[in-house]
Structures are given as structure tokens and as C-alpha cells.
Length: 222
Image 1: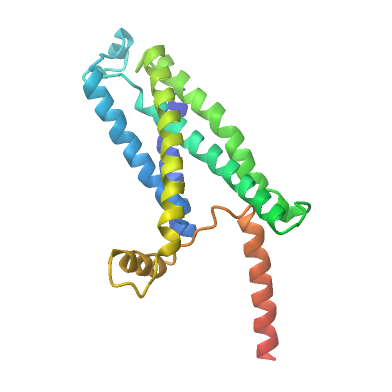
Image 2 (image 1 turned 120 degrees about the vertical axis):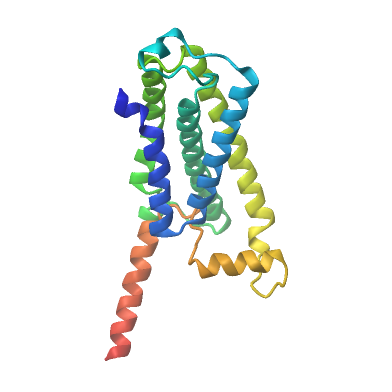
């Protein structure tokens, strides 16, 4: 249970590692959401000022407020973001196929199996995190449930806000713009960032593109 309680920290470092390795814009936005989610949790704790349960004396951790559980809130936030992004990917691909009168058969028509598995596992993990916080004595059941509910609601709201902002702003970024938009565009390009959030199976797309480039390189070298 102690290891399960540390799962939210693993989620943070996993997202950091994914961003550093793949430079995905969505991972960066997820990290920003995690930060805002923690700020929200701390503000709510200061607002409610509800003490932790008496069991907190067993772990000598009674000097901070307990409502809501920030661990449960973070786990629920990440699970919600992953689920909604997976659904968005699938829906956008179905719209693309319908618009271009293409079938969704074949590997390109299905989301990456590993991504789907991570989405499925995210919710049991969030549930285990909540149980561990109660089991170890850090929170009451009510505090964990409240944290999970806040995480789900904030995750859904943040996902919608990010998608709306991407639709309204990111597509208009121009490196030749002398304003803030141009600075952001140049920073994104300079950092080699990309956005494959709507690609059903980005790893397969990368594999095919790399194979084509390798064959093209070999052809030119001959």
C-alpha cells in the first residue's frame, strides 16, 4: 500500500520522461494541468481546513489539512485526461474516415494497443491510490472520495479548455508573426515539439515514415 500511495509521483515523472523523450505538446500541457490541479487541491485544503483523521498520528502526519486528498485528486485527474484524450483520438479518426469516405479497417484505424491498455489500467490504479491513503491513515474515506471527484471534474474541464484553446489558437501560430504568437511558434519549433494527439497510432506512423526515409536515403546514396 505504501508503494501504491507513491503512484501519483510516478505519474508525474513518467509524464516528464515522456515529454523529454518525445517532445509531445500534449505531454507538456498535461504537466501544466498536473501543476494547476495541485494548486487547486492546496487552495481547497486551506478553504475547508478539515483535519486529517485520528489515524494520522500513526504516521506522524497531522500538521496539514486533509480535505481533499491531493493524491486521490491527482490520480483521478490523470485517469480522466487519459480517457478523454483516448476518446478524442478515436472520435476524430472516425470523423476523418467519414469525411474522406475511408474505412477504419487495418492497424491505422485502431488506437495503439499500449495506449488503450494504459487507459484501462489508469482507473484501477487511481482506485488503489485512494484505498492506500485511507489504509495508511493519511485520509478519511470522505476526503479521498472528494479528491477523486474534484480530480475528475477538473480533469474534464481542463481537457475541454485545452482542446478549445488548441482549436482557436495553436493552428494560427506563425513563425513570421512579430508578436507573442510568433514567439510561441518559434519556441515550439526550436524545442522540436510536435502534436500527434489526434493520430490514432503515432508509433505506426513514425515507423512507416522512418522506413520511407531510410529507403529514400539509401536510394540517394546509390
